[in-house]
Image (cartoon, rainbow, N blue to C red):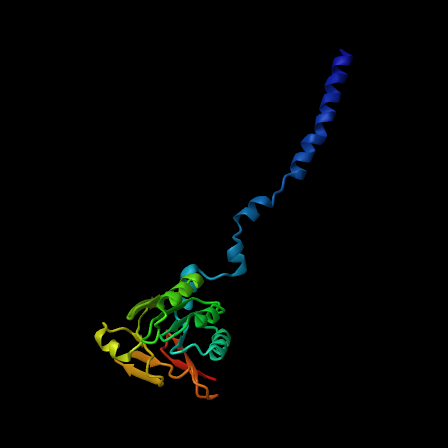
Amino acid sequence: MSRSRTGRASSRCASRPRRRSRPRTSPRTCPRRRTRSPTAARGAPAEGATLARSEARVRIGVVSDTHNHLANVRRIVELFEAAGVERVVHTGDITQAKTLDVLAALRVPLHGVFGNNDLERPALEAAIARHGFHFAEPPLRLAWAGREIVVVHDPRDLARCAPAAVGLHGHTHRLAIERRAGGLVFNPGECAGHLRGHNAVGVVDLGSLDVELLRF
């Protein structure tokens, strides 16, 4: 009898540390950590608010008639990068594929149309495909930040297009900023000239339709 009691007592003593260790080692804070949201802790805004804010402040770069002036094109890339544009639109007269190779240094998407001097079409189309650009015969219609945009080369083609909030063109090598029925028609003008300070590209804020000229 004493042996059996001793056996029982020894088994109970052996089990006591295990029973005591359970509540000590059980992590009471785990459920609290699981219910926390890391995103909420960082104070991140809701997805809808982020989209609304970004759409209200979309800035696009506009360039036209580069005519294979590679030194100017390199400068244009620098200007757009410094301005922080989110997309770039070329309104035609690229002329040669080397221009597109230089524009590939842009860190944003490039869209555009072909102009009357874009005669080396196979080489241009190969460069466009190689760099993942989006070019088309005019008119090219785009929709960004709640704005409808139509892109042509010759400004006379705008009259034959359905109305849009923003009309972009080139061809004339002359600056044009026109306000029509609450919309904008814009041509940044000369950008392939050899006179310093007479070239320009543009930045259009699609929220306010304000235009900024970047001269070089």
